[in-house]
Length: 496
Image (tube, rainbow, N blue to C red):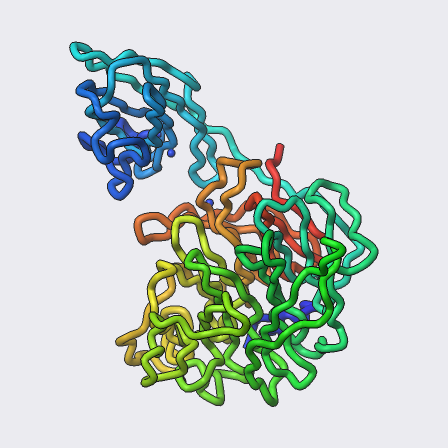
């Protein structure tokens, strides 16, 4: 990782290497429907699902000007607190009498931004009136992104996060320090005293170091946070720390080790992230232990915690195994395992829609992103039988029981090691909502795709070269997106 991440390329060569909404009819995609639902792309939210507002009126909505299969983003509000987001041509039924406001928000398709000719319209619904409203979009404009420097002068920043509802940014430096940026506005100067300095507990040879942290969902009341690092003997280590009682910007330096996973021999393929899932459990993703083509066979060995997603319950004083883990019954594998078949996952993230994204660094041919419901237990992502969707070392192989990636690309396209990011859910650039962002160690370009209805769409290269070597992405409490590169923190913003 660093030296930092061209060694990141040894970080798999980092992690690594080796080895991003108004109705869709009328040329606007979508298939209409009389009372659209979220699943069919019609409408979501609002009282008295699935009909409407509990009355007898109707309101027909249609759209023009959007490319086929592009979801709309139309909000409908009305009497009695009625609120609905519509994503395809539809007729809302069961509406209470009164005036409804129909707002057509901008829609992004790839890098083309479509704007409604009328940003807002009204329609009056009554027992004898069934109005129709059309949201018409004009010719698109090119949508661009930019990077705003938030902070500089950091030492090998490798992760960024924040507690819920907290304006501060916590930046993890690989050598073992956690630094605080008092806010995410540029420019920001890190506080002189680290939030935590545990540099004596780790080492930065190969791909090792302090790799990530996660705040307890109840951090505001219990002050707990968790770190993922490699100990001086190479063991993957998860430890719990707590903020000090006297200073919210300084942690108590005495931590408690909850989990230690031996990682002898190789200094690469450590994975490196932990995060709380929507279920309140703590997840961590480990590498396969290093070496070419997983020589120890760890990723497919359910008796090993390497090459896995691990799920544990840390709400008590230590950790317990959640009873719904796939091997919690005591047979078939280690009880902590949630998923297997990973090489060097760098990074994973949970989206607000319940999906888990895992970017897994490939060996010598392909890079992949796995996307599955966060509730899907016991999945096997294939390594080292497969790399992406290709068989390792053979023209064919037995892929039964394996879960293929949702997205992959070849090293022939110039990539060598994927660095996974987040699905954008911030408010600063609302057009980006729903896009998953990533980059590659060798191409150094900001890229994204949208994952809808079980398929990847709108794969975009934003033609925005990232400065220097990128180590990781970050996300703050408002779910804005950051890039960590060459001692600096940059925020993804709207371009000109």
